Image (cartoon, rainbow, N blue to C red):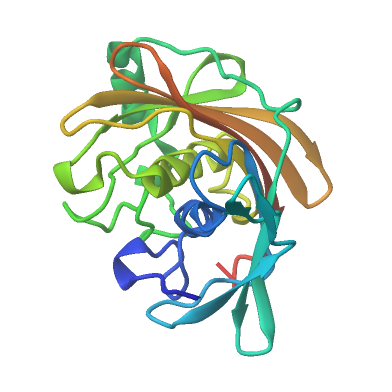
Amino acid sequence: MTLLVPHRFRGPTTSGNGGYTAGVLAARLGADVGAVTVTLRLPPPLETPMVVQPVGDGLHDGVTLRDGVTLHHGDDLVAEATRATVTDLVTVPPVGPEQAAEASSTYAGLRRHPFPECFVCGTARGEDAMGLRPGRIDHGRTACVWTVAPDLAGRAELVWAALDCPGGWAAPIEGRPMVLGRITAEVPGTTRPGERCVVMGQLLATEGRKSFTATTLYGEDGRVVGRARSTWIAVPATAA
């Protein structure tokens, strides 16, 4: 079983977006798996087949379930995904779509972006990307609107992607480049073509090189489509 991250879904110029990669790997645990924790050990290479290996396969009521999967590029461990509990997930309170859209005008990435080609929030991308612009609002939160393109609708891995960058910009990321180290997410819903979703991010804590954030994606009708808790690792500006 292999996994390949297309160039379209890059974060840094030469590696996969962390949230997207995590979402694709999480899907390998099976349908209706609930919350999943994905730990990224190395930058996921682009356009390169990587090997997915199951961990703890078992037969339950005639259905094969996986306790976890690992992702390898040659001898290197790129990432691992495991089933998780949701006791530490925070639902970030929403704002209305108008306020979220207004917040995007203050998006710090418009002035300085460590990863301008990022599929989720990059400023050097066109219509093939998500175009999120998470601007900061009150209480250490970010907010933005994601208008879901038809080819991105209904895909859980794109919800994972949307739950990625708005947390990093709450940290903030522009003055201290960071990469996603770990994300725990649950995605109880799905998105619809053309839906105007609100994505919220919140900084929870900072500890040395690590920052901890929460994100929540709301559908147009206010339903929670997904929520996540992430750990970000600061990297040297030259590595960004």
